[in-house]
Image 1: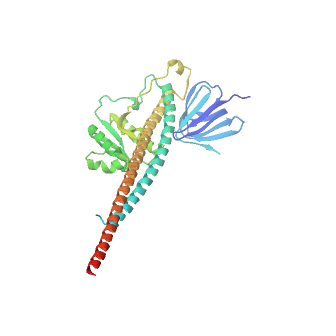
Image 2: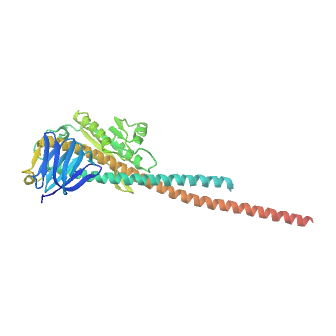
Image 3: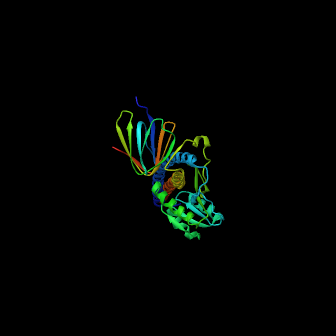
Length: 88
Length: 279
């Protein structure tokens, strides 16, 4: 069974997403950065684009985000940005 | 004794006032809830941004927003007032507080834009704000303040607004915005082994900008929360006063009506007595 980690997308208005995922791919100024469970602690500038993540049941989820900053630590990925929306 | 029709008209007019004040109280309560929710979400967001900033803080930096200017003479005050009146002493208390500071001034809020020039205080710039300021509105103000500070036109930027203590209490106060003070850096052991993408300086710049935006947005929301709370309290007091006034006027009306009846009866009795004597 693949390991999971917590992924939260937070804006100034609300927490857009807070769930457990298998993987997440963040858009950055230097290409995509893939995150898996137990990733090394990291602080990363995120560019406007689509975050692609794989949920616990294997289904994909796409989140449109604006420029922001993401932090990885203690098996948690938190992305702070001014604007974000889940793409249905 | 005032005549009956005049008292009835007065009661109707006070009843209308009561309806208006009650509606304004309900509107203020709804807006208060909305701004309080937005303020508490922003506080969580700002706390997370602050934790990230702690990770990149420490060491030398040349970011202009973090550098204090040598001389501290040109202090620019950013006054956040309400959009409207009818909120007790909310706006006037701020003006009184400001009179002691009196200096270069930037005003946020329609009431200030309309009233402050009349008070003889010069305004450098003014911004319109909605009832529940959004991030985009805060961004416009944060950009203007950043420009003011980095161009050297101001050595310090201070926010002046009503700090929200509770629904019943807001205190005029000020908070220094620029130069930004970095939080204590996290212990070196925690920061060691942390990967910075693309690099520590770019992240610091991004997070400092985010912190500036959050500080302005938080102050706007806190001030607006206070304004709605003050208006709700003022309208509750006004609605209570109209109730009391209606009570007094109703009593006055009953007295007047009773007096009119008594006068009429005594006139009839007097007339009947006169007729009897004549017969």
